[in-house]
Length: 413
Image 1 (cartoon, rainbow, N blue to C red):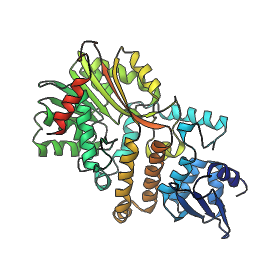
Image 2: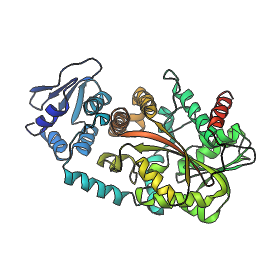
Image 3: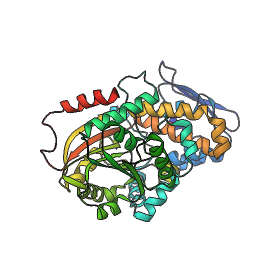
Image 4: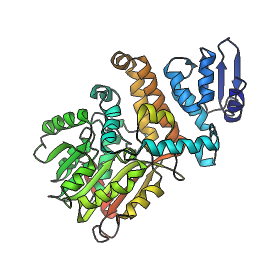
């Protein structure tokens, strides 16, 4: 505790954290304050404390997963929120749980882990997305959108916000009947099916997940759009070599985070090659405020191996190499935090089912992941970007009015 105490004293000033040590002694950090959580945690043994000291982020996650760090008052969402709320990125604060060398080493590990050649990319997708569709059904919306929703009003349901997200994106694609649309990283097919319902377009959705592919095809049949919506198990790089210049529009939602920093230029080159001369693309991705960073050890090991959250500067710089014009950029600052809180609430509500399906350790891992992600979007350096690209400066109307008009039309359908 002598090593952990200075860190907690420095970080927890607003709100109250009570730590119960293995011998029953208690220490309190911070002062109660309206709007800040009050949380009590108990360490079952000293080994748990040492694991956190040795590697704060991975150690905390694994100690909680193993049940050696127990939440006595509050929950894991409130614990992580308490730490992050005291160190808001917007105010220049940092947790400072790593030395300069440690941060450098994390960067090196991130770059190495996110090389993502074709074989490793498939394995990384399998790790997260092929753990069973039944799990995702328990906490996602009815359409199974596993990405940031769009909240024009904070009182919307998750289902309404996800429908609003799809309409928002569709409006930015400037769709027209007869266009051929590519959905890179199509998930369970929700976006592709929606686009085909909104306009008379043909859509090809591609994924590297067997589970997603099977369900997406079933859903297209059930929606009556299988004649215009196809799904295929293929890497975007292989599709670019096979079908250059085929697509009028490209949409990619929540997939760019899996590309890996070393493949950013490859990704945009493939997209440019896949599009027609007047093609348009809408990229929806988690983004990092402030500049390049690294993927934390817990996320890298347990959640998204091979993943990397890009800064806006990294994303746009990579796209420029393929002469893609960034025609519109929107920053969704808190929309993912609202989405994640809904996912967390639904996960907790289905605890018994998830534990029966996946085990208690998995349930704790999943709640730790969702809580950490929520805090990152509420107080950390994470946000969402929607970037519209065009291959030609003449491909789109001169003003953005068409987006609002189309969004109102799609939202009413």
